Image (tube, rainbow, N blue to C red; front, side, top):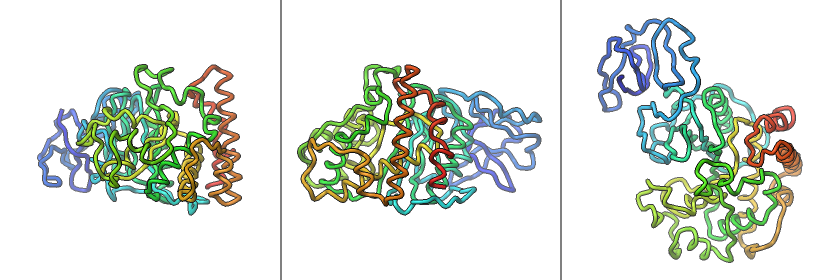
Length: 393
């Protein structure tokens, strides 16, 4: 088997992995010499074997109809990388948006966003990863690959996200060990904003709209020794919050590395990042300053993700608007109140309908003893384009 970088044009084709020796040639590509297959020698059908993650050449067009493969990393990228910031430069400005939908209310979503899709198996051809902006990463807690999106924003970002989710749905699978994480960035990075956001989240009624085991993954994940989505703690001040999450006093710099992972390559050493709302990227390092919402179960439901994107953004908006006020240490608040404060009347009413649908999902899953939300067929039946998505596109 030869390894190369996937690239196709009118002169030659080269592939991330190929097992045949059809006139293998050496090609200089971005300063490196790689193996490839000459364009003239490429005959027959080029298929992608989703079981092995390898390209195959033959006459049978069914070659690409394999079940999703597991526990391999077939891409010509660093298989040890677990953080998208180390590979993002390779994917910059290489995305292609096939269809442009004009999404409603997009002007009320000012933040950048990105998603991390954990999978239990399945591969996507590497040239499609560049086109889609999906970065394959290592994750020791799952049997498949974690696909992280590039940084997304605005109408174009939602269009690309829709394409990404459709491709993931086609080529990957997930199981109970997988999760779906959402990052939001480009917000007002201030001490009072962060501590208020933390306490808002805890004091809200968000538990009402999520499966009962959401904040204790030891009930259902294979690794029962670690809770990957522990509910955050309340803090009386930002100084207390920073010290508890980072382990040292705050000296006014949000770019310093975390003392338990100075190189930024051993995230599992930072136990405080496994909170439902993860602040480590905002508090430490020079990379993208984001907060990570870690509590969603895996899903290919684009309409559901739209709803949660706007719900999460509402928490940040509310924290920005009220950052100058006294931190609400134990002041309860409903998501409905937050929505009415930060969004237009029309959008807040639509998102209130989304909350009702989300509550109905949790109730329906509980009726079939699904306490951790893996019955995604129930999700898709209750939240879809007809019931919710049509408000946005």
